[in-house]
Length: 264
Ligand SMILES: [Zn+2]
Image 1 (cartoon, rainbow, N blue to C red):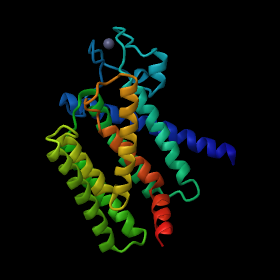
Image 2: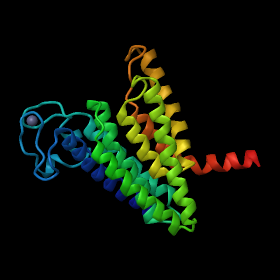
Image 3: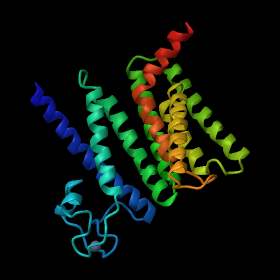
Image 4: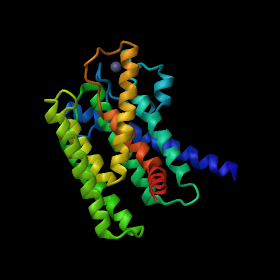
């Protein structure tokens, strides 16, 4: 029993790391404006990478974080996103270990992984790609709505929940963007908020916002105290927003139960 659980988690971790490696490629190539086809190569010396250079995490450790050809440092984004993928896959399997619901697991894992594209592009280049956000938003909104209806919720309540989630978060960010004359948040954050609102639905989207401000505020405070940023500087908001989405997916159910119990 223990051994089989260990094996399942090991397979999940390997799968997650491989998907993380794919997410890295999508993030880099959307920044470079290159298609997904073609072989990967070193950013510095353009040497084509072979299978042994592309094993998630292990290649990075074996090469001590450097290109084997030119010795240039490999950006820590690669192993970090791969490790995150492994971690997320293991958590997702553990969440569903008693009821292996592949469709719900797929929703949670692939939606959160796809958001990692924006974490990478926001932190590295302060970019958020509109086409990717719209595509991911539409696909996962429809998928999540279908899942909820298939799990027994009334279709009109599900439709309302996602419409309210989408409208609320979009207007909430648009208002801040407008009032602060783009100083508090960027236009890209409005779009990312719209994606989260539409995909998560109400009230989960509201819980995601709450956690996002908690994480974002905490991060800004740490960066200010360690003098990594100056007062008034813009902190990339996508990572906080996505951490909020993750927290809402994992703990949203508990928060909703707690509120309904406290108010009834
Ligand atoms: Zn190189």
